[in-house]
Length: 235
Image (cartoon, rainbow, N blue to C red; front, side):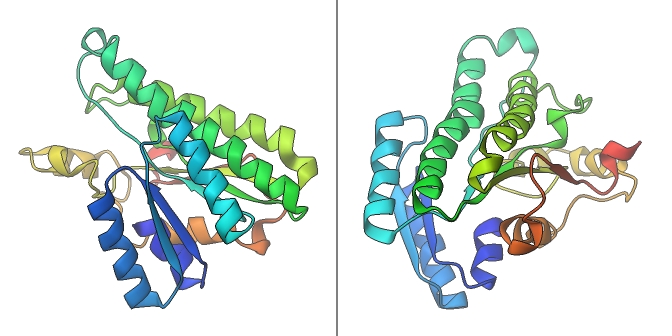
């Protein structure tokens, strides 16, 4: 929702692609009411490759070329490394890395065919380049580490097509993914203490990075991973 709102504030027409239809409809309705933008919702499981391809083909045929892709779906199972093999590992890599690659390929095809290039923005994590001492997240860390370098590689391969590929690496933010952990005693305090700013991220603090990477102002920025982490990765 945070990044969709960021693009809506800039007047972008949006297509929301996610698994849960009721949540999609609520989000789409809110964005239309609050920002007056065109929003379309497509319910599809990103790990279903046939459904994803069909969705992207429908977007292009019905809405026109894709200009911006934000890859923000993800999962983050916790638990000791030896407990994450193989189910959590396979599921996490499929959604956090393979699905991102697939969506990027489909979006890049549209951007290339349109002749005007585009922007791909991946949502990585500080745990794509750091280990977590608070939670055991082997599968998640591996997927986000792979996503960071996939971002760099696609940036190199697609630069000549006018397609920029960048990533945002957040630290701890309150979200649907973290709500379960934040409910545990002392966890929020430990998350904050791990950051030089001594707090977690706040709503709205990811928007500027997204808008910058989506805008013409970032036309010479590609292959970058921008931390939005309150200095977490600086010490």
